[in-house]
Length: 395
Image 1 (tube, rainbow, N blue to C red):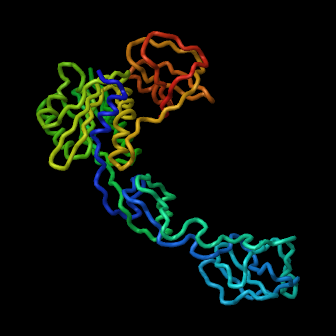
Image 2 (image 1 turned 90 degrees about the vertical axis):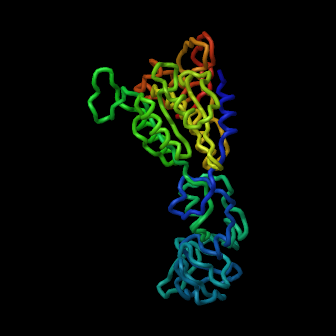
Image 3 (image 1 turned 180 degrees about the vertical axis):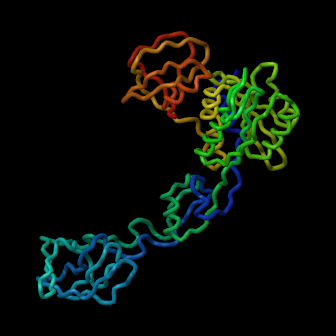
């Protein structure tokens, strides 16, 4: 049985970043850049005022200055600041020729005759002025390849006039929960039936991750039905099948995947919950599909998704493959562990500590909704006292 680190290594070796496309600004949020973005302009493109005030020459010793004009952002000054004169400027307006500083309007006195008096004690050259190219210069890399694009990055692209850039597209991910016992959330569950929670959970998690989820419905415990729906899922970049990968009589998924040309890379990981995890790939020419068979219990499904699927999705989208980021925090209460597998136990942060929750196993979804992290408990039979540090993965 593989360790978590060994499973990560195998998955990382199978991921090929999706080919990039040139996309418009409105399509970029959450994607990763496939190229460095180089600015074609200086920012700011001119010396500009940082405040509402009066543009002056610091070499001018005049006590009273005559206001020549008012310049707002988006307009160019027509006059030149000469000795004894000033130009009133608004925030963002270009600095007029002849001026080398701006005095805040609240530091000035406007007399009845219209003359302006600078009441500030001393004004230094460059005061309240943002010089051209202060933020960045033409030819400078402003966004590196591989960066995940957020709203501020979109704003920066707009500022430099980059209406399109090359980015890795969103992975299309098929979601197929399986089992004759599953009914939809709005349906009444009959004897022996349960509602399908894994499907909605995975679709929501994929949308949150910036992927393009594809709802394949529910696969029944029938080879023909599974074959048809899995075949549709193999048209995506990634296929997530939940349930049907353990060792039960109706765990048919691995066999159907093999029939459809999916090569198994591993089956079972030394982890709790999530031991039955299945992973394989299907190659068709230059196209590769990653297939994850996730355990059917909801908590197992989520742990497997966070630990193995999400890093693969990020790598497909152009980022480096990276296992979940961990932290170390002390326990707020004692904790007893029993078992030969590492366990990801639901916890809740309590100040600087984490509190283990009364978790009832891999079907206990209600407890997981109250958790905001998972504590990675090492294998073995032991007791940890309050204050003992544990490794945690944030949810």
